[in-house]
Amino acid sequence: FFPFSVLGALSGLLMPEITRAHTKGDTAAMRRLIFTMLRLTGAFSLAAGAGFVVFGAPLAKFVYHDAEVGRYVQILGFVAPFMYLESMVDGVLKGLGEQLATFRYSLLDSILRITAIWFVVPKYGMMGFLGVMVVSNLMTFCLNMKRLITIMVYFHIYPDWFIFSKYKIYQKIIQVLFGIKIKSIYLHNLKYV
Image 1: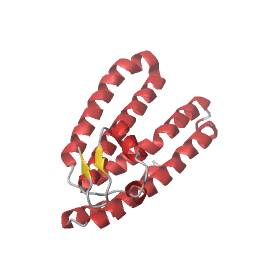
Image 2: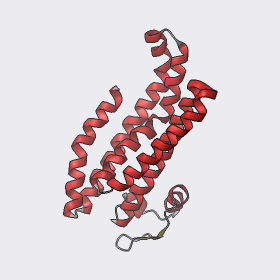
Image 3: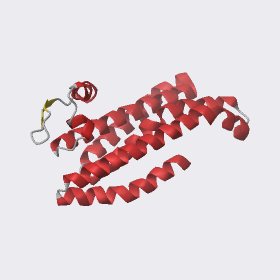
Image 4: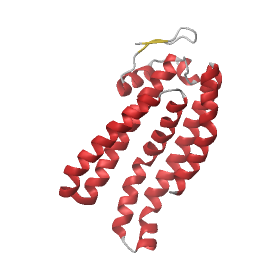
């Protein structure tokens, strides 16, 4: 639908450039392109999600004459930023040569969705389906982000606020959320476990 078509165009422009930078070994360009994509996608997806949450009910009532549809749109509005970021990160991973990882994540996601829909939807209906979608998208988002962060650590690609932070809170957050432990935080001596 509409909001994602904008990100699809961004993906079409950025992914070949990320692939080119990766094949040349240009980590500065990779860093710039990856963080540009994350910033633009994050801002756009938060705005789109907020729009779904705020305007979902009135628009659904106007278009479909049904307030229940608006609740579904509002629920999806909360997960929209993760859905959009997951899709863009998936494209970046493919540009970095991680097609096998993204295939495994997509296969796992499909198997879990089909299984969950088989058991949950007959009992809980549409709300069960939305629950499956939310959990599935969050899981795939986390798997793709963990892989991207692992690749970024491997190539020494960090945002400035991470490298030059005098506090190690960012390393702890990444360790807790994604299971990646950073041993040292010096610009030219970055290692991961």
